[in-house]
Image (cartoon, rainbow, N blue to C red; front, side):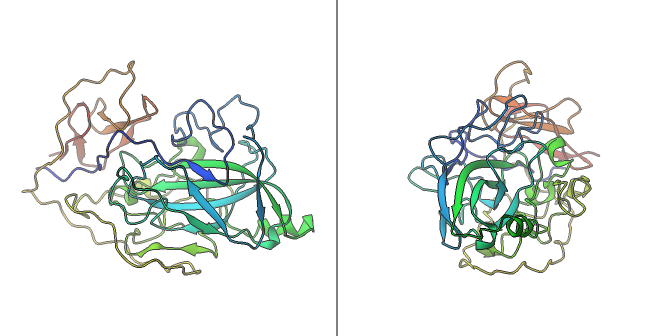
Amino acid sequence: MHIPPLLLLLPLTHAHIVLKTPKPFKFPAYGPSNPIDPTNPDWPCKLPSGVGSLIIDGTPTPITAGVPQTLSFERGNGAVHGGGSCQVSLLPGFAPSKENADFRVIKSWEGGCPARNQEGNLRDGEEAGDYEFVVPREVGDGEFTFAWTWIQRIGGTPEFYQNCAPITISGGSNNQTSSSSFLQTLPPVFMANMGPASHGCVTSVEHEQRKAVRYPNPGKEVEYPEGEGNLFGSVAGCDGNPFAKGGGKGNGDEKQPVNPAAHDESKGTSTQAKPSSSKSKPSSSPPPKKSSPSPSTSISTPNPSTKPNPNSKCQEGTLRCNPGQTPFSTCTGGQFRAPIPLAAGTRCKGGVGVGLEIENVG
């Protein structure tokens, strides 16, 4: 008996979204548009192991506290993966590291980020959205690392994107003690889908149902660019950030069963709801009821036709059914990444291709 494919297939010709403003640090060799690597985590800020520090590209972006600022993205990079959820956060100084990565959130967008009302990737001529944020005056003046983080709504596998930028803040508090204390009242940035760096937290259920993540602690400044119709029914079941309350335990939704019949792959899930700028965290609603897959459902994705070659470079976005037929890998940055398990009771048909065929076992 077949079930609908769990993976949405996206065009392979687009680069992922890259931060434009604030102007980011220079990007390392792994590339500006790739997600954080779950097999060799370059968290934070895509800083590879062994690299001492990030390099400022020109001068830091000046930002006035209490004044609206623009978050924007480079044009021509169209892989927005149906939007998703984003956060912007701050870390004092210009020296983020694995030991110094306590980013604190100043605003969250749940759904519709970095593009609004998108079923897949941007088409030629379309652009990602601009978004507005304000640095609270209580943050204080000084040098900070600004981080934009994004969990995409659809794609081969759940991923975590981060771009960082050096900024200088003025117009805020001059009291460094109160500034530091205020930052600690803000929520830690949500972390997931980064392997050991996020302690096993994976947003697999949201991803398989093609819903944007509801952050467990988005903070006071929250915006819903598409309304709330395209968000997952409940908040994320884990947070891989060790600074979060209960975070770093990897005890979240990666252990929950997959509901393959919770959506119809033939229909887009983008909502046309009017944008909302609600400032309060939404109350959690119960997750959608689960139903059994229909035995008459057919597979619409193409069958993979080539055998995997672990030593060769792969085409961006292709998928590989690994030995055992229960884990699969997605090609990112020219390499197949760490295997991702399928739902219990399902398997893929072996091979490599732009689509995988998923079927029930037994």
